[in-house]
Image (tube, rainbow, N blue to C red; front, top):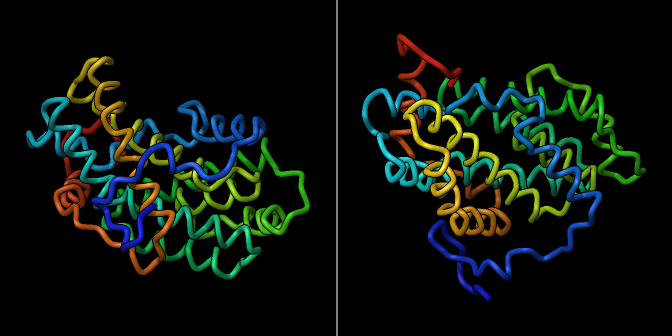
Length: 254
């Protein structure tokens, strides 16, 4: 049991992270929502990695592992997890005002035009797919809030806020949603590296396997964090996403 402040370097034992059983229907929906086949266009984004590959910062599997570890612990991975948790909690309470504020906050936090596009395009596409095929059928406050808010696509939905809304409405445990989101986040960047470095499939899976304890750690940090704990110190990744906007030849949108 951790009794002091939880920081980004605190390692949580993996066997204590999950606190709530995942039912088979919830597991099925979570696997569907964060599957690479779910129509959010995730394969078109590299989170600035393409620029880091272009300038020689990421050339090997070891480089990629370090790059991703920093993003997860100190960058968008950690911030997104905190936003997802806050969105989940607000949706569970039926607090529509807080969800709307989180929607605005998450978009305002993006450090570049392409990162804004990355989160808003994916989140909006995610909600559109859920509305069409996976509407919750319960009468819980969370499901009712989803039915009220999901139609509002005016300013775009940041991906972690959209997932928090949907996970709560479908009664997917928060812990599972956090871990699955971070796994999908890392997996998409690994997939981009396999194509652009290029790395072999086995090297990509080795990197993803090495990130398992870090993803558990970041999920645990987010679980105990508040919005006041949001912050980023991954300046190279942010600068890479800005430089990518003018990169001459590109495979990815970010």
